[in-house]
Every structure is written in C-alpha cells, then in structure tokens.
Amino acid sequence: MSLLPLNHILSPAPPSKDGLNLRCKCTWKEERCRGVQAIMMAHKLAGEDEPRGGECIKLNLLGDSKKKTIWRSAVLSNLGLKYDDLDDLGFVPVARHHWSSEQLRFFDSGKRPSTPVSSRQLNDLTKRTITFDKRFKFEHRSGETRYFQCPNIPGSHFSNLHAASTTDERSTT
Image 1 (cartoon, one colour):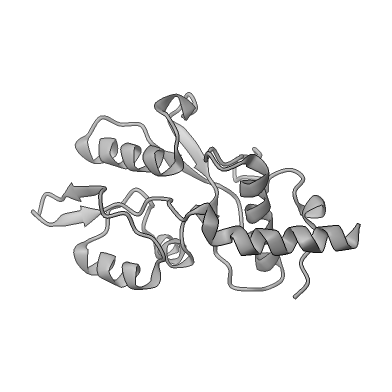
Image 2 (image 1 turned 90 degrees about the horizontal axis):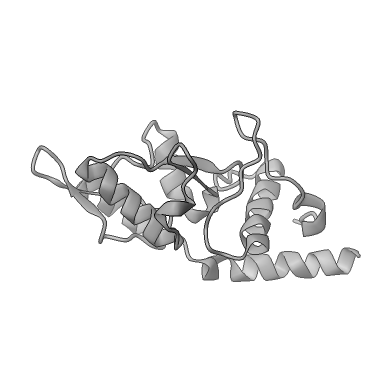
C-alpha cells in the first residue's frame, strides 16, 4: 500500500470532539510523534483496522486519591512529562499510537485508560502487547492488585514505519 507523503498529511492535527486541534504532549520530537500519528491515520483512512489512527486522547490527571496519584505518576513518567505540562484543567493530550492496538480495543470496549486492569486481564493483554509497565499498580478495595495501562510504546517501535514514510515522501517530491 502506498501511503500519502508526510508533508501532505502532517498539517493540522485531526479535530477533536470539542473542535480543538490537540497536539500530543510526549517528549518525542514533534515531527516524529505527529508523523507517526499521520501514518496511523492514513492506514485507518485506507480502510485498515487501525485503532491507533485518530485524534489524541485527553487524559484527566487531576485528583488527590491514591489511585489518581499513581495514574498521574505513571502517565507523566512514561511520557517524560512534568506536572507543569498539564493544562489548566489537569488534562494532557496523548496520541493514540502511544498505546498498543490491543490496549485501544480494550478501551473501546468501555474501559477508560485510567481504569486499572485485573491480574487476569493483565495476563491477556501482556501476551499481545509489546510493552507493559508493571511498576504502576494499585491495590483495589477487593484486595486484588490492579495495573494501569500506561501510554508507553517506545519510539523505536515505529522507527522503520517512520523511515519508510519519509522515503516515500522524498520520492514524490
């Protein structure tokens, strides 16, 4: 499949539900993150089942409960951000490609990214997910340990994809 050149699809971010153009706050170089986001969107628009294509997910990181504090720490740590990177309402936009396709399908089933998963769900997801950080866990009121699904797919996972798209872009100019 031939992808559109990056300079064609990199223009503004896909519109969000509230009409704003959100940019991911990760510490990847902006053109790299936006480039991967555009490539994933091109695959989705081409009719492929690609849940990583689309707008950024706005994560709410405010709250003082132990669960919220662990969630905030997990997201900020995995994306290389600081508390000051949150907007005035405590949200941070994160591109969908920072999660695996399996994690995004799990979210589409009605689970929110901030909902910790049980050990059983974790075992199922880790079999299909390239990275899963077990450091960020939460003791549920039932006594069971639950784990957060942090946005932590490494940039190296997309190196070949981004290089191929950049080559396609050069060959069309």
